[in-house]
Picture 1 (tube, helix red, strand yellow):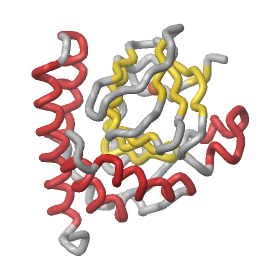
Picture 2: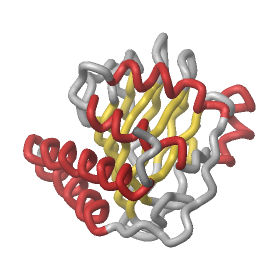
Picture 3: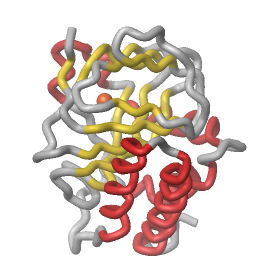
Picture 4: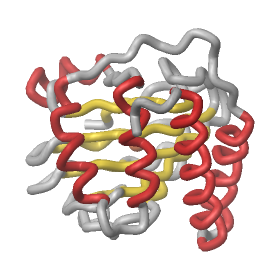
Length: 212
Ligand SMILES: [Fe+2]
């Protein structure tokens, strides 16, 4: 399948992202559905650049196979399959300013690839649509950012925390909505964390900061 033209595989991924988000938007509370609607509209209108970013894999990519496997049989299975077909041609990145606090081992076990957003397949300065991986047994400490954020986990046993609430599991496809500046953290257990994630920033996107 991945020998199909990039444009064909991108069209499939776009339609899977839009179908998934349309379904989530219908079931979401108002504030959350606004964010989903805004990002979906940008995905719908996005045009591929003439020159795509150079494909690149990072250490965290080794968890992708297990990540894709855990999406099987869940509500995001077809989105994961469309992503798997295009992923070899995408550029994986990581937030480099985390290295000082989180260390080399963390940096080698996580990565993400922006379909829309900074250093993304399609550049965007207000909206991000990304696929994000963290390997098992890792802690992504409390952090926050101005942008509204919604994670949709593909499956797995990650513990998600928001503000001072007790960390808890989230079902595959269940939205984890981090409103502007809400501190949040994730702890992976036996499975990787694998999530489709949206950001909507009121101004030019600023990277997440750890809150200590
Ligand atoms: Fe976040």
